[in-house]
Amino acid sequence: MVYRERPSNISHTVAWTGRSTGAVDAHRVLPDGCMDLIWMGGQMVVAGPDTKAYLATWRADMPYAALRFGRGVGPRVVGVPARELRDQRIPLDQLWSAAVTRSLEERLAHARAPATVLEAVVSERLRDTRPPDPVADMTASHVGRGHSVERIAERAGLSVRQLHRRCLDAFGYGPKTLARIVRLNRALDIGRAGFAGADAALASGYADQAHLARDVRVLTGTTFAALVGVDEP
Image (cartoon, rainbow, N blue to C red; front, side, top):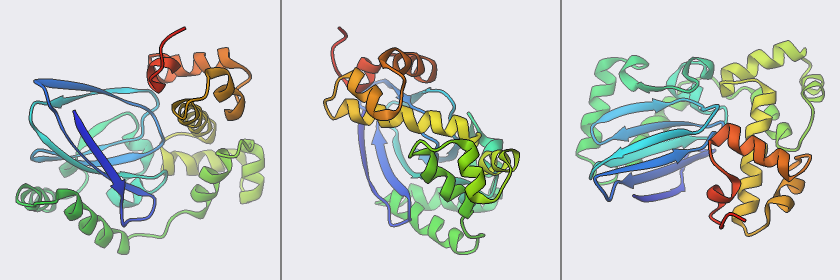
């Protein structure tokens, strides 16, 4: 599989492209709180926020182009609360009109840079949507710093239950699940930078390396070593 990504001109978004190099490629997509708008060689699909790893199959010699929206951005683009897309891959024509989706797919089929076309379409759509939810932005920032749900709710002027509902709409799950996913990805980033599992666990807020190992297994179905590209002990 050949995969490339770059920062998008859309805030908090990454543009990526890919193509399978074999008959079929399988790729483990890890939960990260994000949503993707994907052109799969002819069809537009929305990938909702995942709660566990998803094993994606890349069909032979099929081009892919997509935008990965940062936490809370995706629902503004597709026009549907994230909770309704959690752990799902849905054809875009089930969310946008069939005519609009078909027109976009035709443009992408003839485009030299499909990801650039996606950026233009999404940028225009975002200009006509509601502004970002400041509570969602604040929550995403504070869970990344390890703040408690109660503290975040207090800072937002909401009850814990109200904050939970806002997070479901923005991220697809509540703040505790979001915090767990953010912590996992932080640990993996540290591990990929060359640090041992014990160091990654400590720096990411896990109780110990065993705690990290359990979370990795539950959320991804594999091991920390396998995900960061080091040999098993």
